[in-house]
Amino acid sequence: MKITYAKICRYIIEFTICGLCGWIYETILTSYLWGKFAERGFLHIPVLPIYGFFAFILLPIFKKHNEFFTVFFGSIAITTTLELISAYIIEAVIHERLWSYRSWDFNFFDGRISLYSSLMFGVLSLILIKGVHPLVNKISEKYSAKVISITGSICWIMILIDFIITVIQKFNN
Image 1 (tube, rainbow, N blue to C red):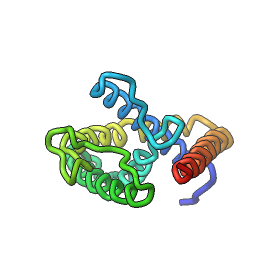
Image 2: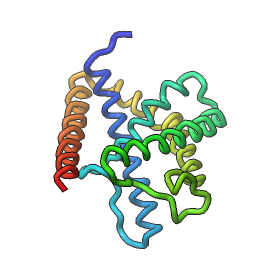
Image 3: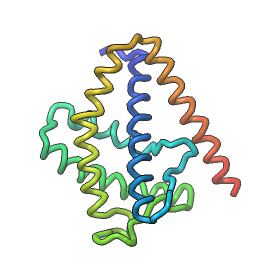
């Protein structure tokens, strides 16, 4: 399989879509729980990169074995483990907690993971594997390599610039 810049950009577009969906999910959930608008995320743009990274881990794992229960329970185990590891890494690097489930029932490891979020990750993974990924494949087949490359380039440049600005701001505070 030949990897082209357009193919890389297609994955960047999918990464961005997953990050945007994660931002929407967390913003709606948190706003509901807190009773006021609560914008989520580390970046300034409405993208949570952790959702894009997790998608890239899950997609190859469930490429051939994508039955409902396999995806649901397998992704719960994988994403919960990754969320816990990510929480410790992020806390060590930026000395800040980006999420906490301390106020939720069935939270573990001092609120770094919870049963409810794990179940939701299972649902979101099903949506990714059964809906988002096939849809992105279909859409990307309809557009030229040039359009996909330009769109993907805009996405990764936007995320990269925002990430650099955010990290500089975090370390200057």
